[in-house]
Length: 451
Image (cartoon, rainbow, N blue to C red):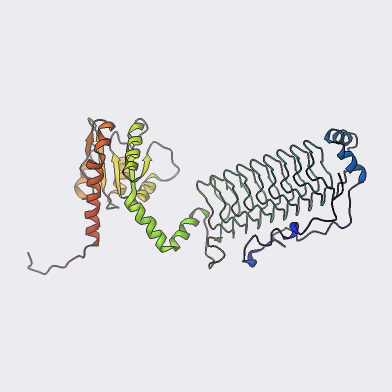
């Protein structure tokens, strides 16, 4: 085990230079928020020979020495620990400034309070390592494995975590401004109250992660995966969310003003809600939004009903509609929802080619039909199981609106599915065509006396 050569190469100071592409104005690396610029170079500092020698004898010898010298801070400055087996090593409080730990096995090692400024940890293995309050400023951790590691209140300003594995890691309160987590995986990781101001999270996988009260102001989230991510109290203002996947976010961000939804090559456009960012950008691409609406209008079929006790009905309808080339959207009124039901159903109805509504044992159907039918001239195909009464108010809707079809009675789902195309789909599409023709027709003006 020897001392590392004088300094790491240019990697630790240039790895971020092209991260934001040609848009140099977006580069926040030198000064961002409260983060500092390039730290002082280590200079001629070298490791304590005695400490390097003890560590070279193995982890068991090292840990015994540490237990008897708890008042000594290990000096491993710029030590060459490349590819070393340091599993469960007690390196707490150690000075590893500028050390080379490339491909080292630091699984379950104790690095709490250690100084790792400018350390090279490329592809190092730090699974379940303890890095609480460690200083990783300007450290190089590209491709490192930090799954289930504890980086609570760690300082990692300007650190490079590109393509690192941070799955299930705990970075609560960590200072990561502006760290580079490009293409890192951090599924189910915790960033609660972490400072990610100006951080690069391009194409990072944060699925299921917690960003509770985290600061992501001016962060670059282009192409990141935030599916089912917890964002309660997070600060997202002025972040770049172009291409960010935000399905089923949990919680409400503290602020999300001026979110950039366009790539750096285009004129900047901002919105104030991360959940609608994708949709607003789609609206800008007129050809694309027309294609989306046209596709939905031809292929989407809204299926309404109370299916909690009759799962075979919804399963059968869904599968048969798929076989016929449609995209069924099933809305079961028994399912819990935090949204207003009428608003949800109305939105879906307006995007559908036609609607199939099972009137059997209705609960919410009367309310939803009353809201949807008068508002949208979309074919409404009611079906009902034999022996069940049709609720009284439906007669009025049927008589007043031409797009409400005569209810179709069925004895069992197995009877309905084989004839679904003939008895439901074909009549609905025919009616949809007639309604479309009427919308396209030009209204004429008649004169007095014309019959």
